[in-house]
Amino acid sequence: MNKFYITTPIYYVNAQPHIGSAYTTIAADVLARYYRAQNYDVHFLTGTAEHGTKMATAAKAAGQTPQEFVDTNSRLFKTAWDKLGIKYDDFIRTTETRHESAVKKFFLKLQKSGKVYEDEYQGLYCVGHEAFIKESELDDQGNCPDHARPPEKIKEKNWFFKLSDYADLLKTKITSGEFQIEPPSRRHEVLSFIEQGLEDISISRPHVEWAIPLPWDTSQTIYVWLDELFNYCSAIGYGSDQEKFNTYWPADLHLIGKDIIKFHCVIWPALLEAIGEPWPKKIFAHGFFTVDGQKISKSLGNAIDPLDIANEYGIDTLRYFMLRDIPFGSDGDFSHARLKARYNADLANGLGNLVSRTLNMIEQYSISPLTKGGLRGVKELDSQHPIDNLQSKIDTHIQNLAFDKALAAIWNIISQADELIEETKPWELVKSAGKTPGVNAKTPGVDEARVKLEQVLSQLYQSLVAINEHLAPFLPDTHAKLTDLLAARPIKKPVNPLFARKK
Image (cartoon, rainbow, N blue to C red; front, side):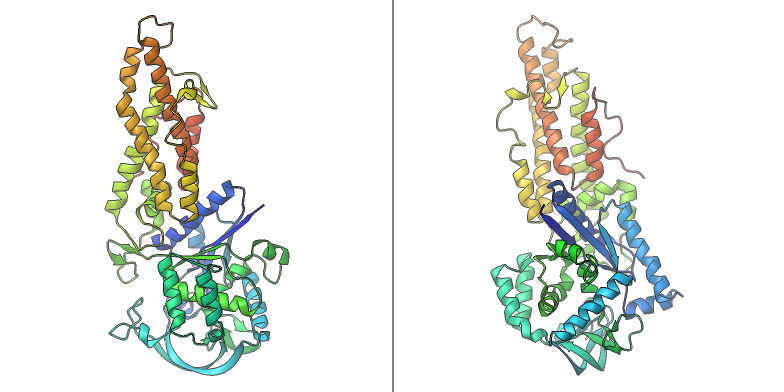
């Protein structure tokens, strides 16, 4: 059996889940559901990042110990993903014993690689990023552009990793496609970064109270970003369950935000190379979310709780909007107005209305029998049925992470079904077929109208079956509801709308 190991980034617990973190996790969930349906051995990992200075600072402000703080806030993410129907296989926390133990084993192996040395470092450190940054990365005011405040000037003795040794290997594997970085704009960005020259990086820091101690020098703690990167291996048994680790590693896909590509596309593969482990096969960096044109930030207070949207419109409306409205890999903007427009046009008045009209007509016009293969007359349908090539289109789009195009292909079938109803007017056909269709009507044209009616409703029914099948990874709740409606014998009138706002 083929395997598919997919990961999200692990999320910082100094802030609550918002639509940005939900976006990545929902995309991963779609892929996990899709590959499970293709009989892959899927392992879907998500989790939380819980070490570092900003966690300790946030805990102090909340009047809690760091452990109390991260315990509380990690539960918020787990609860949010559970309520949003995210079917992950594992949820890793970087304060778990299994993770800390694996990280220490990894660093001991890294030390033995000969790629680690001690030296003094002087530079700029951004607490918000938990990372050192270059002066060239600052804005005109000398601030970190992502956090709108100046970094700290730090001079300290650290342990370093010889990242500069891996520039040529990284370029070779990236340009050959052996190590895939998508979309192309991010790949070009990484190559440009490497061309500017790689510097050795600090792998430890002194005087950080909430971090994992460096195994061979307990006066130092492991640089938090490297601790976090290793979650992808610690979660699948590195150093403790070799069989499981060998089953799933290397990762088939890391989903990340574009702000962390340097860590994932340069530092992470170099570290793996140093300890003799395979690189992840593919990294895909999606864009940023804004809210009504503004970046999500605590200071603006504009973070959108995904559960608020799900509570009002339903989980699937949130999933549909995020994946349909924003091409994955591009920056996107969230607005309640656009969400409402998508809900009304595509879901309530689109798919929901098609389901209601079609199943009501089948019931009202006494079309029978309904068999597993569809309605009587299906064999006489045109061979170029709109659903004929849908499977191959969906496969291609999902494998390319073009979720918006996959959904557009499904909704094209919905549009064609609506057009078929308007062109054939089944309510007129039933009049031509007589008030009691199918009961030995002798009037010329009655049988012909009856056959035509059955063919039209059969094609509509088969379209709904195909639509429902391909909705499964995208809109799982809708898929479950529609499966029940289509399986009912006799067909039940869909009294309750498929999509209904709860407020």
